[in-house]
Length: 117
Image (cartoon, rainbow, N blue to C red; front, side, top):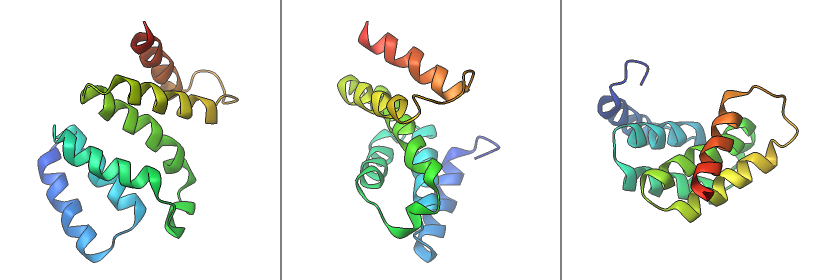
């Protein structure tokens, strides 16, 4: 993924998941699908992840928040703007007391404002 080879990254994450189905690996696969333009595949995983709370999700609490931001972006790309708005609002509500200047928060605010206008 760091080299922006998202199709290849997706293949590797698919292989990893056959051995270890951890929450973080599924999230990485969803992200690689999204970056590869496989919106439906990304949505399938993100929607599963957002609605499940397995034990290993507790070990990555930041993923539990960031997934709302990532899912909102995929919804945007899928043209599901009402769903994107909802996810950005959840993300921003959770981090409403965060420090100023955090890039994702600023990005989410801008995207949300654009979607609402």
